Image (cartoon, rainbow, N blue to C red):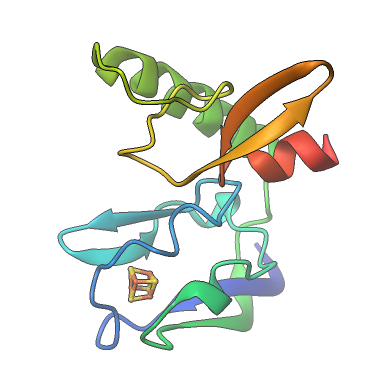
Length: 132
Ligand code: SF4
């Protein structure tokens, strides 16, 4: 256990809109039973990119005792999400994120020039593409 900054979600204020899910590049937030939850505290780096998108002011950053942030757990969770995304991908004509394969119906996508290619990337994969 370490004392560090970590996201806190006020479930009384949360309306389950899901806007906080995509900005979290680590995949720490999911909507469960209609409320946003930090699914595993080792996935939350406490940077708070989710705070600004919440229309309910339900997200804050607090300093408290918790497990350490784990880049290894983030990588493992990403592999799992990517596999799940590929399994659930349907035959359709919508555009998909070149990285995780999710469609425009599942996540907000942005056009991007990558090398000599024009690609679509989702808001969750974009930070990793920029920062490596
Ligand atoms: S953006 Fe705010 S209101 Fe919407 S699911 Fe996330 S915490 Fe809840």
